[in-house]
Length: 112
Ligand code: HEC
Image (cartoon, helix red, strand yellow):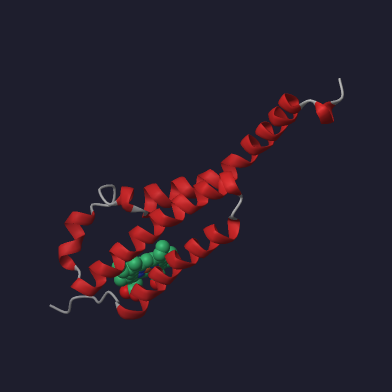
């Protein structure tokens, strides 16, 4: 049997190759979603700390959680369609959200 004309074998090989690559592309997606994304809100007790933040800071936090979830989706899609540049573009939005909040807000020790 010649491998190059045997499509099922070729598919099986491609399938194996894709599965081997999956962990590297899926792990960042899961970390982003569950530790930074919308799924992380209850984990980090967002509802308890948000009232202590000014409105603009809450919005910056929400922007970060949203962009992290969007990156998670883009990274998962990249494991299927190999559109890595799009995933990296989505990751840039996450870091922009980090920088956006750091530039505008600082913690300060209470003086009383
Ligand atoms: C909603 C606002 C907000 C967002 C969004 C945010 N941070 Fe922060 N971050 C802070 C504040 C406030 C501090 C406390 C340090 C300060 O007062 O400057 C801090 C501190 C840090 C520190 C510790 C710095 C130090 O001096 O020890 C790191 C590291 C950090 N952030 C990383 C990130 C990363 C990475 C992201 C994005 C994934 C992010 N932050 C998103 C508000 C934010």
